[in-house]
Amino acid sequence: MKKALLFIWMMCIATMTMAQTNDYETLKTEKIKNPMLWADVPDPDVIRVGDTFYLVSTTMHLMPGAPVMASKDLKNWETIGYIFDRLTDSPKYDLQEGTAYGRGQWATSLKYHNGKFYALLAPNEQGAMGDTYIFSAEKAEGPWTIVSRMRHFHDCSLFFDDDGRVYVVYGTGELMELKPDLSDVIEGTHQKIFEREEDEKGLLEGSRMIKHNGKYYLMMISHVYAPGKHRREVCYRADDIHGPYEKQVILESEFGGFSYEAQGTIVDTQDGDWYGIIFQDRGGVGRVLTVMPCRWINGWPMLGDENGKVPDTVRPLVSGQPETGIVKSDDFSDPKLGLHWQWNHNPIDDAWSLTERPGFLRLKTNRVVNTLYLAPNTLTQRMEGPTCSGIVSMDCSKMKDGDCAGFAAFNSDTGALTIKKKGNKLVLEMDEMTVALSDRDKEVTKAEEKCIEEVALKQSKIWLRIDADFRPAGRGGRDAANFYYSLDGSQWTKIGTTDYHMGFDWRRFFMGSKFGIFCYATKKKGGYVDVDSFNVSKGEK
Image (cartoon, rainbow, N blue to C red; front, side, top):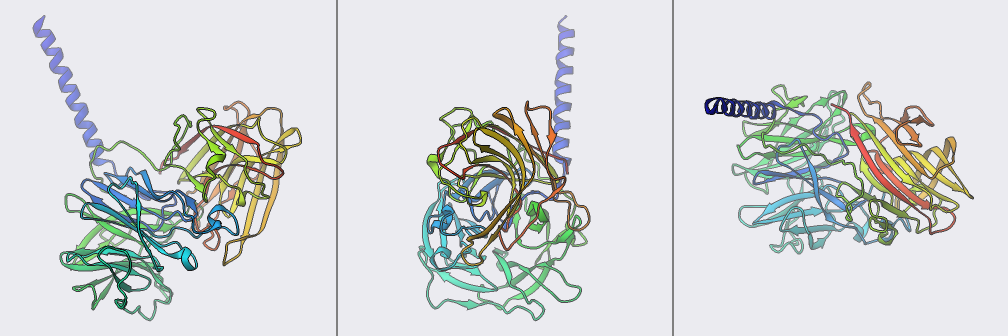
């Protein structure tokens, strides 16, 4: 009997060991598929502290702003915090006296120095609204505190040198030294460290500076309009931070049926390997992130595979990190809003609640407006490729006459499922919306709404669904959204436009399409909706 039990025990151990080995082999061989983040995550800066990579990105007019994401394997990313909750320099950030669409926080630079995290960002605004901020934090999750504000620096990189001096590199090859306490620039230190080449007619942007083996490396996007040349990532190298600098093209590659890639940075692993993280414009989904090998060849950080192209897959980092993502479902059972959500502009805090009806997100009307584009407290998450589907369940029983609530593929051109209270009746519309904005103040000069289809509702509980398809279909991608509703959460009815086209317009929002949940008043304040859940699913790459 004992021998039989011993044999069974040994077989169990062998089976468990084999299973663990197989799990390890799966982890070890599972590739990172590009795009690494198939969602709107532009203007990246990435650093590594210990075994963790930290990523910051641009979210402009969305609040809280300057998201910080973390990963241990460059595959599974999660939002762990924001550098600021809101910007308050102008009523534009509150959707009053203009808007901040396409403005706000841009191209944050992230550094770790002497045990502290530092972030430098400059809103793309006029005058004092465009001041550069420097923040610091003990942990990347925050809280972050403002260290200083100073003049505007476009697409800038903060850089701490080994000798204790601190610099900001910005624009098309400009540099200034900062005071040791980071309180301001040192006047008289401005320098143009290189001149762009004749064929580089556009700006060189997206400055990211690092130091490696005693040399300074400044990576930038280069817009070239000469025949046979494309958007590309270039690197300027020098033995002294003040120059002279020499230049090398380190990436000139299209990928996946879309345009040529550029703008990003490089980062090393604990094992001494290097990777490039570069973004690519992909139409309606926005600007996605790709990861690729970085090989030091003749002292240059050359990006891409052995042919200098962005690869479909990248050798994985084995970390044991569980699968996660930056877009998440939510049942709103937590009394604190999840970090995967951002508001469109500054929220009005007393007009939303997760505690007044536990397990629901309550969105209350608080300002009379005539368009979704001026509605406070629209809650958003990124859409993701290649395909994704978002479902919202909503209780509309407390809406007032003139109220509009619903679920949108939100952008400067928007497809929306809108529930409207008309007198004592509820109707559901599939609407196509578009907005025109003034160039200077981003004021809403014109907002149009076209009802494609309307359905009368006999109940106040409804489920709304948006399916999005960002798979390549020729060079421009499909960028198609389709809209559905359900009265029981299981049987779905299509409504409105087939394959509504989601676009990307840098002149207006300058962002990819977002899932948006909204509730606003067109006649009188005081109504509200209760959102029971948001469920999102993503197709395989």
